Amino acid sequence: MFTGIIEQLGNVTNIQAKGTNKHFTITAPFTNELKIDQSVAHNGVCLTVVDIQHNQYTVTAIDETLQKTNLNKLMIGDVVNLERCMPANGRFDGHIVQGHVDGTATCLSVKDEDGSWLFSFKLVQPDDAKYIVNKGSICINGISLTVVNCTDDIFSVAIIPYTYEHTNLHCIKPGTTVNIEYDIVGKYIAKMLGGK
Image (cartoon, rainbow, N blue to C red; front, side, top):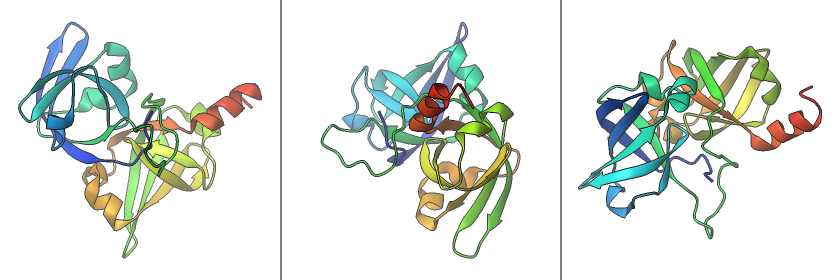
């Protein structure tokens, strides 16, 4: 389980396709603290560490993950948001994030608000709009954020300077695809109500 509070930024240093899988090698400041089989969220996608070499580690994404997330669009040199799983004795600063991405959204606009930024996104799967509510939680590229406004399949989030500078949000521009994970509590309630 994760909280959506990004711990570090990593850089993609190698991508290797093997069958329908892709192996991503990442350089990250906390690599020396990792161990094989540990879970790390990459742009909000929970992946297992399969190899560690010096300051780089490797994770594998299967085809289903590649089809559902923006990992298939990653290129060498790209910056990814990283979060290790939450320690049992840690504070819960964000919201419940599983690292199980529900789908993607496309950035429509980034507006400089003179001290913050307003990002607007359009859902790739419009039916998922039922999981988004004003002032509710949403996870974008692994970042726990609050929805400012939502109408149908378009929603916006406001970003403070710290989050903008310390996550890969500063790399996002109109047309960029981002990973979305909806609030698990909202998904359970929707299921209990029959998806209404």
